[in-house]
Image (cartoon, rainbow, N blue to C red):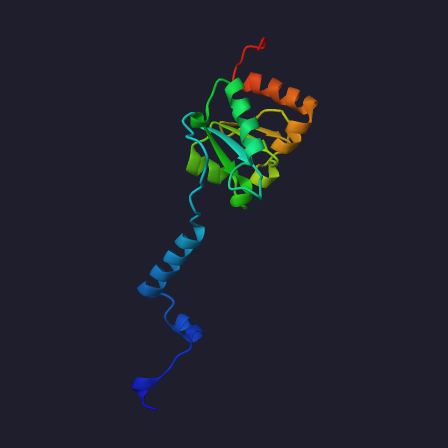
Length: 171
């Protein structure tokens, strides 16, 4: 074995050549790749920056019943599916409010079956109460399935939606 054939372990190479340019470039690339998240896929057009976050592990977005219920909600609020983005939390766990803010330009976020803690928000609020944080309004509710079964919860949700979307109370 001559001097031209010396084999150095990866640990020894890193220790000996820690300040070389190649090592820095490789470290930089690996950090960038690990910090990047896949783009958030959503249902709708998000033209009014309104995010509906659901938590449905069985469907990509919503079941047929949940979609029908959601379409009824948004129609009552004088908005359409083109105005909102439906994001399925179960498809992107973990996802944070920062991810939503960076990728979806949200102004209002309505969480159905998720909590502020699920989105790494630094506060807790009761269902149906609006909280503004970093210029985004948040409301959290029970899941869409639970709302469909609970008339009282639907009334509370409707009251909150009237405030958020400035809907005439006589509807």
